[in-house]
Image 1: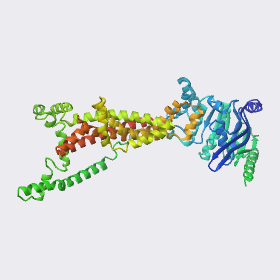
Image 2 (image 1 turned 90 degrees about the horizontal axis):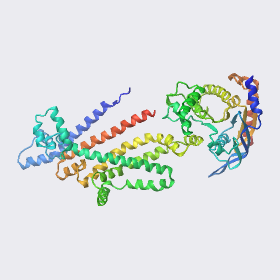
Image 3 (image 1 turned 60 degrees about the vertical axis):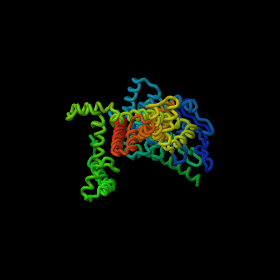
Length: 273
Length: 315
């Protein structure tokens, strides 16, 4: 139970807001007029939280994650990452980003793919080798260092891309539907591993998904979003324990949270009709 | 280990069919001259006799394949190519004598090996200039909007001008500023070979998708890292496809460049052959040029396989 205490202690630390959005707006100008991808989004993510963003397509969940990563620029409101602007945070290499596709370079071995950010960030060769070994072990890919991406299954490729995002010392891990393209069995396994990894690394994780069970299983906080305009309709603080075996998904507590998420999604949908 | 020549059988069949068509075509092409000769001499010409004669003319309209092959032999290690003295010294021909003849052939200006060497050196120099220039131009086009808008139309326009019209002007202009010999021919070769490299490299350097570029952005990667670690490796398959076209184009450019210069090379052999109606000489030079082109493209292909295999992208 030591772990639960540590987790709750971290959650109670109100000063450690890692990501803070206030009145955040993002409007894309298109030929068909403005599209409100994000409207008046207020959200605080604290250190060590696992936050899922869930909602139908077009609700702005990916856009919000990309805004945190400074891959999109907000058109209004404020957003701070580690107390800096998103651009400063990106330049300070504050986060690792995992995309929907593994996006490994086909001409690099698994090892060399994981080493890519380390080379760019100027780590020493020794440090590079040690870190690559460490993170590959963390995602259980030891022994596959010399393989090329096409020699690995989709699930293993996605694990390698997570290792790549973990290789450098970023406290924040942003994941955009990383398991969306994988089958259910592989996805379950990777979810379990991701939780273990989160417990070991104490990272703050932002996780975009469109799967209710995945969001409930993984998160300490679930952000329910809805489209047109993209906005937050509910923020659910999970009451599940830190230790989560897969069969926790059959517990009444899990089902209750999943129900609340579903209600939130439905409410957002009915607003639009 | 994969069989590197999986299609040898079909290739041989195609070659056999081409040779058969060629032989059949030789008969009607050369028959008129034989009938005229026979009529002049006032005698009847049987069909069998006519066929045999069309295969052995000195200046046929269309030489038979074996005449071309013998022509290549005569013009590389034959007496005509290596000179009378060397010819006498090495007759009857031994293996050692054959080697001596080939060595002599490298420096004899009556030999196709000598002329092929001249063409090859200008081709390679031109290919290097064209490839280097093409890659630099492609980088400029990909990284600079102004270059993209201004250079590309000129590059395309440059390829619409017939090289045969442009080559003499390049040679005259360069000659007037004191540049002659290898360089003008290499520049004409480069002129033809840079274009496929530009087109291929622009496509290759732009091949990374938005996600791959976003990934680099999340690392706050410097421009040179994005180039060296993403754009350049991604462009390799495109580059090699272009190099194969480029090196063949460089050979064509060199041969065209040799026509007005008349200082050696396969182009000179082609032109002098046509001046004097030496059709076998023309065809022999063509065959050597084709062998040269096939060899060069083959070498580029071999390097391509090695490089892409090391990059884990072997096709």
